[in-house]
Amino acid sequence: MSRSCDSPSQHGITATMARYLVVIHELASAQGTATVRGIAIVLDISNPSATNMIKRLRAKGLVADRETRAITLSDHGEHIARIQIERVGLVQRHLIDAFGYAPADARLEATRLAPAVSDLLVRRLESVVFANQEDRAQQFLNVRRFEPVFDVEGVANESFR
Image 1 (cartoon, rainbow, N blue to C red):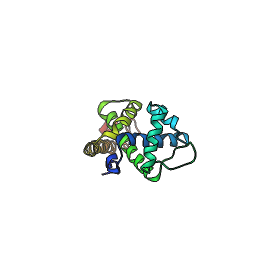
Image 2: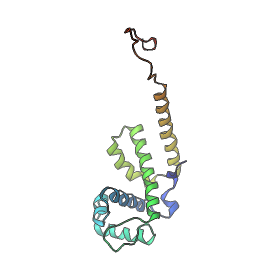
Image 3: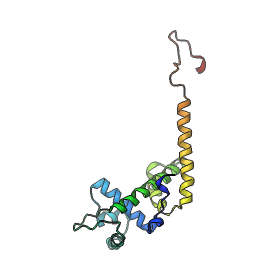
Image 4: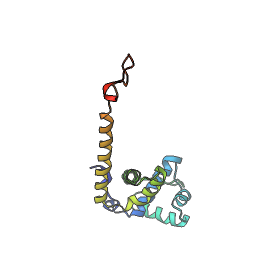
């Protein structure tokens, strides 16, 4: 099993805290920094609500103490964010494969769902998603890629008739 089986509760954090960690990580990755305002915009909440949660995350050691307005994750916060991102990716892949979601819609939905997904469901999703990937890989390997459709005289290869 992958590390994505670590649930937020195993680290003493709530699903909401996990969402914040992912948003902070993604803002920092995309823009170089995360701010209270940026977090509030992404999560569609007020600045004071974001500030209160940042204080809670800081008290748990998940956000690094800095003298600047930039919000950065501690090593532990980064670890949890990466685990959650793996979970989001797993849920996203299943939404695309099983329900035909467009990738962007699946990402949005998975970001909302992943922190609340149980470890049991994560393990089951992994088995389905990874089985599908193995099936696809096997189908790819079974294709006769190196047999020409026509021989040098223009006669169709027997396997393609």
